[in-house]
Length: 458
Image 1 (cartoon, one colour):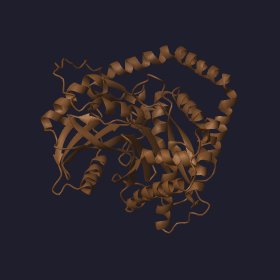
Image 2 (cartoon, rainbow, N blue to C red):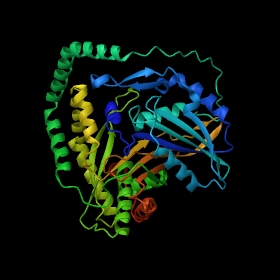
Image 3 (cartoon, helix red, strand yellow):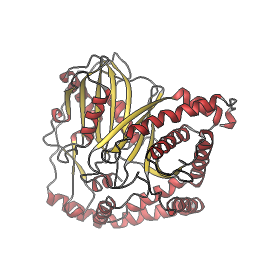
Image 4 (cartoon, one colour):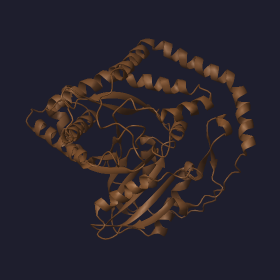
């Protein structure tokens, strides 16, 4: 899965995750910031490694130490022109999102942004999807930041030395040797997987039936899908977790059910504003699910479920009930298990075939209208060089024919929505962002009109 995010990338589909943190001022100096990040590098080895592709895709890409690692390339400072508004910050953010990460260097960078109005400053962090999914990106974020305001940058001696990189000939030789040695190992792994699936065959059958049913119906034809360009628009919204808890207490459902219901309202508003029909229609949404084992770190460990967001339902309570019933059914069917099994089986393909399949997939129309990711974060403040992080807004990359996606990150009492849109086809992205705010408002009002439920009801 890590390799697939590299193979699928092209000039229009840039597969880096990102987040924007807003901090209370004053901003640290560029030198203070670089020294702080340097102190964290021993805990994030990938930040000093780059990708090497094996000739002819005889094996999956490998990580090698960057012989010419220069922290100054990855950690940079820039200032907003006066007045330093949030709209200017968003414009700078989208400009950076359109720039590919240099594959000849470690696939990350950070930008210290000075001059934000209100005595604030910002930090933009980009990280290629091949290095981390949402959960592991959160782990890296909490490593870079501090839990205490008084945490000082430790004095340390950086004795890291890059290991000599393999030559192309050595990579090919290793790939050929491993391909011979791995025959029996692959067979053993395959048999282990098959035997594991046999022991839960009823669940696997139900999971694949659910996955097939989700993707069998034709995708709704709307302006949400079509060709995309390399440039992006971006908007954000913020929802109090206390309000979400109050909605759960009155109307039931999980945090994710409520998030998807809010997103549904936003899509309804967007489509109606464009004069498109919503009655009896749905928006198919890919919902990533973490399948990470306890203690498992780094990389990507995600499967997917597919929800049909009921944009045709006007009543917020009815809309939440529909989403809740769907998600309960998808969880009961263990649809994510089917996606995880398919990802596991893909690992048995010859590397060259896997690379070719992934590259071709980037040119195939998406089987979904949109994506909504929801990643829980720390519910206590984080700090950088003594400055409190006030907000953290996530960014989700777009792919193929998907023109809009939503990422949600919970931090310090709020769920923060980051909305990514194609620049040309989503000039009205703020209609969607405003719809998110209306979605939470109407659910709060509906919850206030209902008696509080007992814990067993929710």
